[in-house]
Image (cartoon, rainbow, N blue to C red):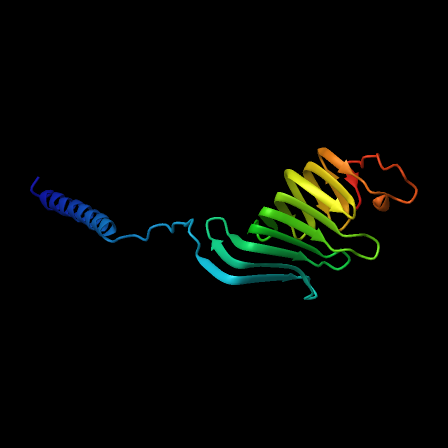
Length: 209
């Protein structure tokens, strides 16, 4: 038994050393403050007055322009809010459009612009078509697709023709207009195709103004 006593003492000391090492490591870990995970704030982290943003095609030709009196960037969803916003689309081969609203929110990697408050889209006239105006409380612009839509009541005016409805999609590249629920339609003879003279004929849901 006496011969094994030094071995037991050595084992006991080894166990004590292991326990002290574990305690020291745990104490050090608890005593040193760790960096807290970064909190994503809902407060703006960037802002600017007289905001202007341009996007161009691969050849460097400007195709979309967004501007306003002021801008705020929100990091929690990477969105921009622009006051008194003006969105201009000038893609080659398409008619120039200008959208205006009291407030615009750009999100979805700058692919979506939500125009709210007195939203108005104006398509400038071209060689083969007259001007087009769309007004609503809210319009959604997809600059890369050159598409405008809303699920709110909207008014569409072209020339002397007028259409009121709820829910609308306009494709500026194809000039296709879809109004999903017509409530009031007034068609002028000047805006009808030459082969048609029936002024009481309501347009189809899909029209090409």
